[in-house]
Amino acid sequence: MTPRIPDLAGRAGRAAAVLLLVTVAALALPHLMPGSPAAAALGATATPEQIAAYEAGLGLDDNVLTATWRWLSAALHGDLGHSLANGSAVTTELAHRIPVTLELFVAAQLVALCIAVPVALLSAWRPGGAVDRIATAGAFVWLAVPGFVLGLLLIWIAAVQLKVLPATGWVPFTEDPVENLRHLVLPALTLGLTEAAVFTRTLRGQLLETLDQTYVAAARSRGMGTARLLLRRALRPSSLPLVTLIGIGVGTSLGGSVLVETLFAVPGVGNLASTAIAGRDFPVVQAVVVVSAAGVVAATLAVDLLYRTIDPRIAHDHR
Image (cartoon, rainbow, N blue to C red; front, side, top):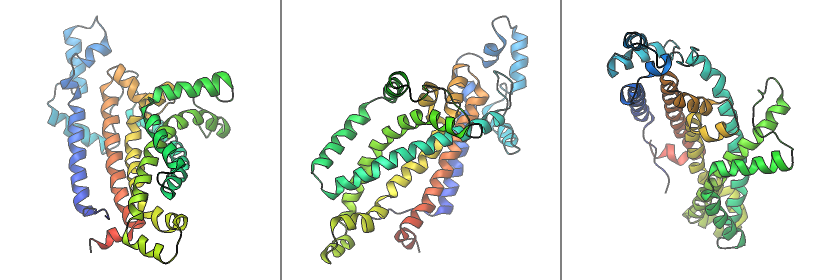
């Protein structure tokens, strides 16, 4: 069946409402968590008066709705607050780290697609064949491997045994493109290989479903072989679920690559979030949550538009 996409105006309104709710929830974190971020920042020797003054300066003595309004008003002017750990502007921290996370995300998606697309096509070409059975079993096994285990295995092979790639660290692309790519390989493989298993299963199932459609059967009756059907008729409409996975992954990668970025010491948003959570740095945590939610919302709307470009039948259904 052709997916039906809601009206974009209505989707945008609902997305804005979701983003507002996420913002309120993020700003409620200091009120819900045990302990005081002021006490953690000032230390055990702080007096109650100092803690109260510190909390007042951070706006922690306000209710959630007042805090949300104040935060949103400042955010519209580019002010996401300041880190409790070092006093730096959160906007500046995110500006330095978002490009790193997005570079890692793009590299991981390329790895996943380069593996998933040919394997899924070969599996759908001869369902139940040797390639299909191996790919299906391999995907199940691969999904069962935790990401940190895969990362450690890659470090042991490439950095410890072969000594061809650095185990951890990061070099910006603008400083040294070659070293940047060398440091990018292992974290990108760790993320990409895991996603390749998901992409392969998703695309294979969609390809088999598309091959059962009437227009494909008509093309088959005219003598078109399975390989040509897969490439010319089935691949494009079957790629819609992959577009969804990649699109949503753009937003979730902003806060969801904590494990990989921490393991490989990649200075991205995930690493920033991990450090902020450990240090109870609520302004940073709140900003990461809201920015990640905004990324998911924006990516979802972009996916809707791409759906209509990839498969014009979707746009036709809403005329």
